[in-house]
Image 1 (cartoon, rainbow, N blue to C red):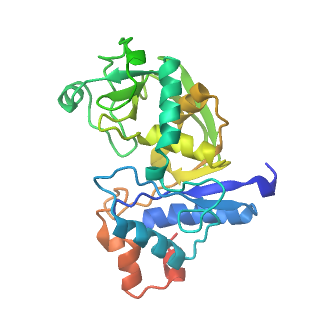
Image 2: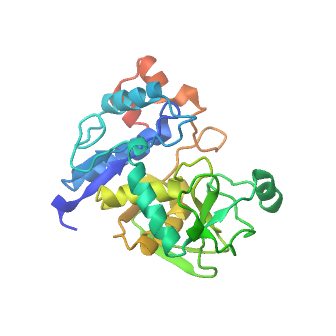
Length: 278
């Protein structure tokens, strides 16, 4: 990769105030773009309409600028790869869903949450989706659906295939499809594209060359590599960051209000004092 071809991104979701863990990851992304004389893209991941709020969207822009992070493209400054808010990019996700449907990579799933809870353990802090038991994976009626609405759509993983990639921070990684993760949701029954599909499509259409994000998403990278292959998309490099944890060893979440950037900022701390914690 030549230095002028580097394109990184930060992609917060406005479902709460950003905390120190977010700040550290986004600072690393900013620094890697700066060190490579590249472009940093800001993407607003606001697909979850039930949890996303406009005040959080404003706060994340303000707090990251205050921290010293600046970007060349985003919802506030525009750019050649708009839209930079996922809520405005539905047409791109729908085109990908149709492609996956037509090629047999996805199937409709009508399993309830109760069905899934009875068949799989709850996800832990290293995964975002429980193992799917496979009740609907033999369905062959995907082509009958003109719209993804009303059912969950799952990607049928190649059972037994080992997905390998080399992470810039953590080195060689491998996850076995069907063992480490199962058929995963790409479109939700409430007619919202799921994280795995949306982020894959957005990173590709924004021409992101390196994805910087938390280590809790290492397994998601394996899922997304299957989507990249199915959709015949160029694969970026990946750099996963160590997680910031609280005194009890739990990774930070948006419920940790005392460690939110906004709270620390209002307490009188300067940006350089925050960055010193990284």
